[in-house]
Length: 124
Ligand SMILES: [Zn+2]
Image 1 (spheres, rainbow, N blue to C red):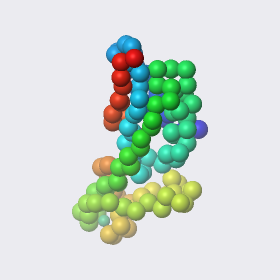
Image 2 (tube, protein in one colour; image 1 turned 135 degrees about the horizontal axis):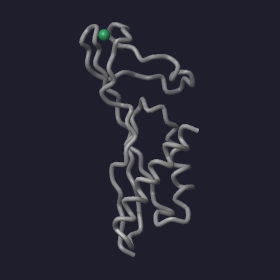
Image 3 (tube, protein in one colour; image 1 turned 30 degrees about the vertical axis):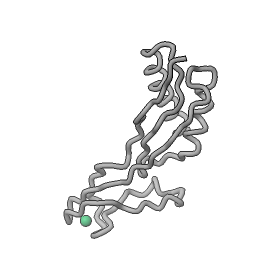
Image 4 (cartoon, helix red, strand yellow; image 1 turned 45 degrees about the vertical axis):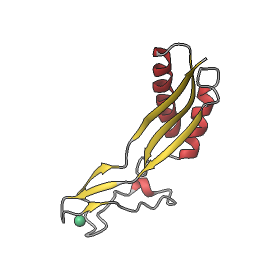
């Protein structure tokens, strides 16, 4: 239920923001989800829609932008993307390695985030 807890957090963030602008109805939200966040985007949007029900954000569109991963290798200095095997259900059990030298001494600079980028709302 990783997706569920992430979704609840997103929903809380959106509703808190909407609360500050009373009387507004949320039309759409845009999320940024890193390709290494290991989230099933379909499930995340499903739960957000469910949790929005009965709130000012009910029926809001959920757009998701995938953020490409970027790593830095501490062994060879490689900087750039990696290609996680997103089809592999056990991918999360394997540490990511440098595509250039295979080292596991890497720092993930980008690609694990899951953030609310934009909230579009209108006065009712
Ligand atoms: Zn390397």
